[in-house]
Length: 324
Image (cartoon, rainbow, N blue to C red; front, side, top):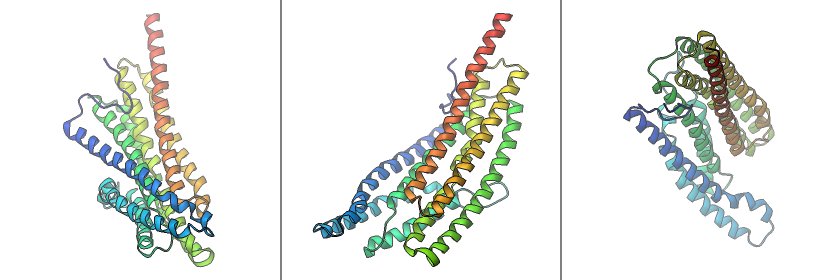
């Protein structure tokens, strides 16, 4: 029998779920395509300060204006097509609270898009279209990994291990609580910090600081912590159906450890980057990259758990068969 992996497409995956997977991949691919184009169009703006006293400044400014309009045109479908799950998920209740991870995402996008649109029209100020497209592309990448891990765990086997399911429910409740308070604190911190910058430091840097903090307040990696580790454990139980009670306990213990490492590791990563964003050191595009790094680290750690458990269980089963 072909072994099941952590992000594999289950053989018996229903058509509706396959369609969701394809639609999600289409939105993700479109966001990445636009992101690369918008980053290219943003390049002339990065060079402007080097040509302040140059004869070609007027030509460069004309090019920047044209590139900004093209970037605006490309970013709009990203907002309404690729990021559509963000808007539709704003008022979906998560547990006992209406505050979910879509709120910091939506706030970050709106706060970056409106000033960028005004700047494109008035030709005064900075635009953040590349940061918006990067944020959406990286966010969808993290959510796609989370979604495929959930699908793999849910549809790859017909029988659920009770001990693992109990552990998953406990870990999911803890992860939701941590993510909820993280979002609340980060949003409040972003608003307060932006006001301090606007009133007392530098008005021109208030918006990028606010956008960076909103981007970093998205707990994408935290949301992935439980599904990815759970999917890894589910794959182990499916691939090794003859595990005894002690081996099952070992798998669950390692799964809980991996989940806690991913959850609190991503939390520490965000807490380390937040002061840098508050100081204006982390630009919005860099904040999006830090979010992607933490999400990929969670996915890699869960995959590492799967490979390690596969090796351990294969070795133990081989030893057991030799002894018998």
